[in-house]
Image 1 (tube, helix red, strand yellow):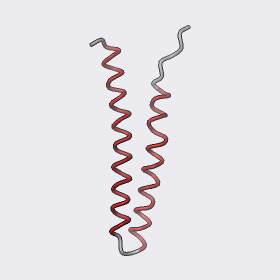
Image 2: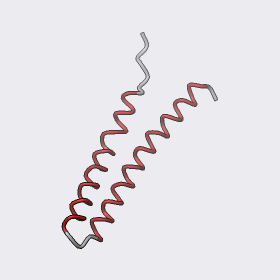
Image 3: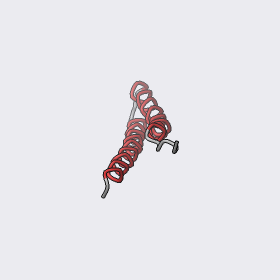
Length: 73
């Protein structure tokens, strides 16, 4: 495997890890939201879910844009 292929593979796995971390956060927030009996944990669960959804939508595309192959000159 060439060094470029190894770098591309590491970057791909980093993007996947960011997606999975966001999904895990969303599941944790939903779990907290469903089991909460008072208002404070419910609000915390909502905040965790919203931030995890934002992470899923923002971080992977930002990494892909940052690591995009430059156009040939």
